[in-house]
Image 1 (cartoon, one colour):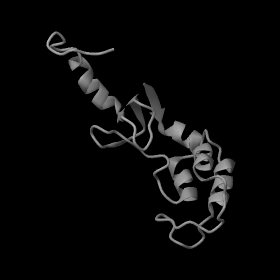
Image 2: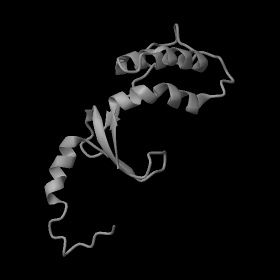
Image 3: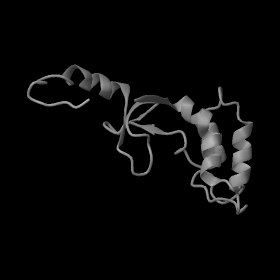
Image 4: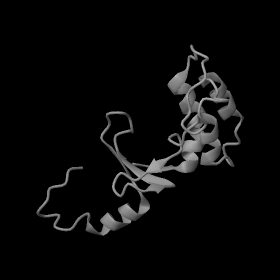
Length: 126
């Protein structure tokens, strides 16, 4: 289990960007839903701009303005589907095909009192 916050995603955005796109073989500007075609940066330029951010005070909008979309700092609860600022991540480390769930505080608090109801009728593995 792990708590993930929007600040965590902001702090790790430069490293995650580089891990995703390095080596930078193509310096063509990327298309941006947020910014359109004009003035869009290449993957290398985006990495350089992310490196310049003050990761303790940058906002999700600051990151989105550089990258061109909000997906790098968006956190959504897998249960209620709401955008939130923090989640409890349970299961495997998140990947494209992982068995992982991100749960917001409200959903965790909702289910917690019921976790062990009828525990004799349900087997729970450790």
